[in-house]
Length: 370
Image (cartoon, rainbow, N blue to C red; front, side):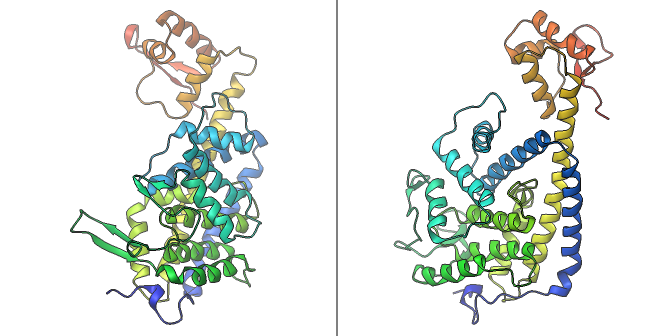
């Protein structure tokens, strides 16, 4: 049987090379500072929009990492309602979506409250309101019991599975989680809180205390630690989005580290690299928010109907292909003549520009926002 890190003497006394990671940590902290500086120059409305985008992306991508696809409109609506934001066009969200959003928001908005087993049980129960994961009934709101088999992370077809990791036996969980929570809730003792987020993620997912949902809750604990590092519940960058982009590398570094020694320097370095890219991605998100703000500023004083508002939002979110009057009519369920009457005031206001082609080839696009 393979020896995993949790079976080594002195577990969980994990170590890493501080000197080797110092330049990387300093670079991440510098990027965080630049992001904060840019945020401070934005209005509260733009900040709210950035938070809404970030949290929506975080919920969607953390689930997508595990192969679960949530409805984006439901997630956005659920986040907006819980943040008290008026975004228009809210749609009902099913209880599973509401549960995942509730967990993510509790982790970040309640970053200054202790993390306890009861709080973790609440997160888990919110994620699995039916008591099932897919077709299978699972233990919800409690540590796993390993009643039928050891907790393993496997891939491959039945009969030819590959075991990537086997978690500590269920009998160890009370002691394992007691040690983890005591450490998580203690002061950083001089250590950098960003490094604490990296360690929290790895430590929790290695204990793997639940029947399902361990990856998502591990990422939520890391986000909670990062909120503590930032001293703010307002999230402007998404680690889950960047992990989703590097999903294969994420699983490879986890597996290699869980099969390695107590020196987890490679994992810590990977986490810092991922965090740096997440912060860079936030800069792009803020750019999109500012573009949106400039568009609506151009339309101040212009009467905009619901069709126009919906189509402008669609263009800002990244419309694929060319926008013609017939496509506008189809998407808004109106006539081509009405579509043209919607479009022309937006051209006059400088929000849309008309292509040089004439006749049926005429199309429209967002004007340059520089």
